[in-house]
Length: 122
Image (cartoon, rainbow, N blue to C red; front, side, top):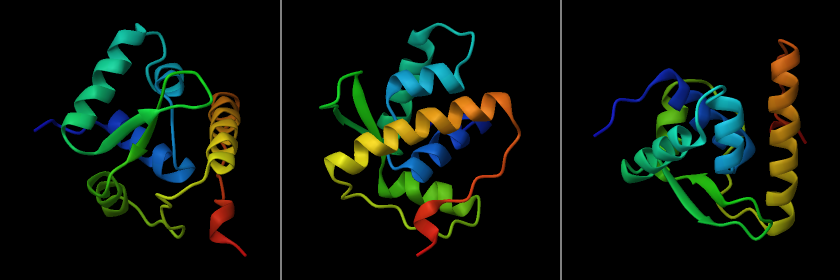
């Protein structure tokens, strides 16, 4: 059992919102100024604890990180989320999610913004 830190909650929340992350994204935006091995080690710990799962990334750049049902439950227990989590996202959707995630996290570095999830609206 691991102790879930605030950074872990942000990682899992981002994974929920964007459906998928890569270790490179996690390292760059959630472990700023730390060696990449720290972020990879934490991803492995979250996976062993059952919150995320990793699979091959057909787009390059390492593995894809997605939430498990346990990870989804943890995220839902800490906030109000209107959009459902989609475990069956297709390849095009994954590539778009990775691009959206990178853009959003980069903008978060520059501005304090409130994001509206596009999946929540028709």
